[in-house]
Length: 374
Image 1 (tube, helix red, strand yellow):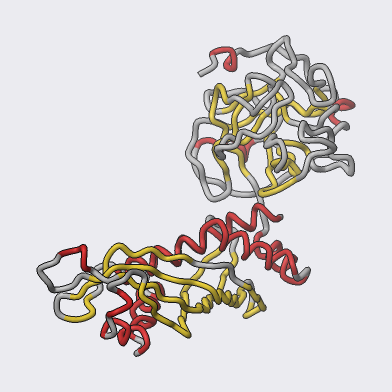
Image 2: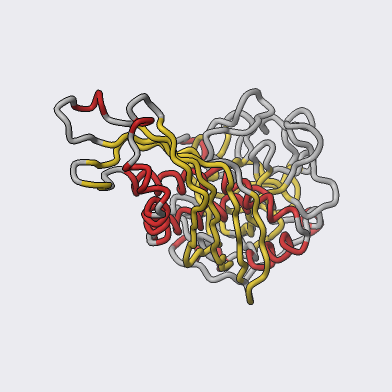
């Protein structure tokens, strides 16, 4: 831990005219834990956001979005944070975090050197003196992973492998406390807005499929075939699923509920099957099965983590066609009956539809994609 971050600096009483640099917005969220109780006792300001380009915390309450190391102004994504100010420093909350009136970022003002500002020189403090909670558990309305960058002095989000863009060069470098900052995000209103706008919510679903959904479906299929008994002595193994792109549709299905359909036409599974012969694995046939897939689910939206709750998944496969994937596989007909007779589709869809872990993973994946888009 950077010992200098605990250093307290005496300040004069706040000047009300300085405070006019930022407009205060209080918040009445009820949180749990010591950091949350502290935050409730202090006045707080909203409109603080994560910048998707440089990863710093910046104030988004002005038409001008400051100066970003990634070029032009900051670009907001994810939660809207509500940060406490003008309260005593405690063992679980650090003061001297300030708004930089040149770049709009949150920076630590407790050192003589003011870091590196994207607008040039060091940061320039204005407005409130923020007192930010740290070293506490993350909650559904308070996000951990916010850190001090000891190169530029800004507050940045350290929860991704990519460390953003630092004015001092390269990515940010974390030091000191792990800050846990409360937020308020109206996810039902967010999803409703993106749905009425049309394309943005479809983009959310495509990001979800690309980042997580395709993998979740593929793993379920592999588990359904590996160890599957086709006949006496004939079992599936060494399965590899390749899931293609999908075309999504979405429509309202009630209050804070949406019906989603994802059509993925071009997929295939390759696997081996054991053979009850004395020749061993060298003579095991390999197969490749092509198929289309339609995944339907109902998505409930709430202000919690994850914000998306998928109660059930209805996956169906169609148009399965089997081909030999090695010389032995092209000669085997009996295993092909398993696919063309429909048992292949039933085995896979029952495995996916009955898996609560798959539903939970899809819920988190949609919520993560939602924060990337809006």
